[in-house]
Image 1 (cartoon, each protein chain N blue to C red):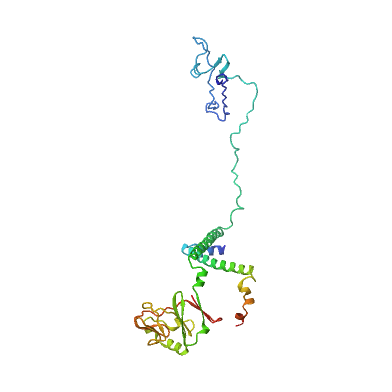
Image 2: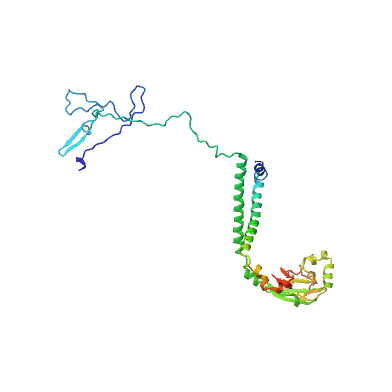
Amino acid sequence: MAFANAFYNTIVKRNSVFVPAIFAGAFAFNIGFDVAVSKFWDHWNRGRQWKDIRGRYIQDADES
Amino acid sequence: MASSSVVRKAINVPPTVRTLPSGIPSAPRLNLAARAPSDGHHHGHGPTLRSDTPSRFTGGGLKTTPAGLLYKTVVSPAVSTQYHQRHIHSSAIAKDAPEVPDYSAYRSRSDSNNRALSYFMVGSLGVLSASAAKSTLTGFLETMAASADVLAMAKTEVDLASIPEGKNVVIKWRGKPVFIRHRTSDEIEEAQSVNWKSLRDPQPDEARVKKPEWLVMLGVCTHLGCVPIGEAGDYGGWFCPCHGSHYDISGRARKGPAPLNLEIPPYELNEADNKLVIG
């Protein structure tokens, strides 16, 4: 109840706060979504991407 | 053939549900005052011809044809001897109080929780749609950008190990000459010690190089686009032979008509492979 009222009073009450909060949330969501999907992709394809197998073929670059 | 069939028209009299103040049951379509029609020959005796009995010429009464009975209108039918009980259910059962269902299980316990949840849902939809709109827009704009193969072709790679200290190299990048100078420590010191705030296009040396040893510039004079000559001019840098612009060892315009310093292309220094990638 207190949390709900705090949420309403701080964010929703003024549209000048609500709309920028939505845009900020969209920005954060975009980055978070990208990071999450990339992480999942790398996890799903681990051992198959160039960055995983690069060490097997380019030894010199790793040593220098 | 239609004329020979009996026209039998039945009227369903509605059950009486209401009584007039006079005590007569109200039956709107039933004429209780109707009498039997008089017979055809009225010459003074017999029942009086009433105004509400249908006249003969309108088809009231009985009409037979040689083919048989055409129609017969019975105004006062015979009393039925059979007993019909009529159950009248014309109205709902009256109850003491209206029974409203109990909705309390569906009501929210707290109005403020309800409000916060509603606005949270609205905001979440806004967040998702704004994100989707942004992704759509950037995806569309990316189709206008140069594709990766074009960008890869537009890059030029230079092996920095092949350029000794104190030497200039001119390479071609996107049809334009690019000067790469491996500067000596003296030249770096000279370029950094100049009071750059007093120059025509004030720019410190640090803003023009990524690593002080390597100066990478577009070899196009900012005046009219000639290609300056390296290791020439009054300032030990470049000299444009067309109109006599002098550039110093950091590529800054010092003398002559050139209005700006030599341009710096976008480039990356690859420390591991000792390579320079322009573009």
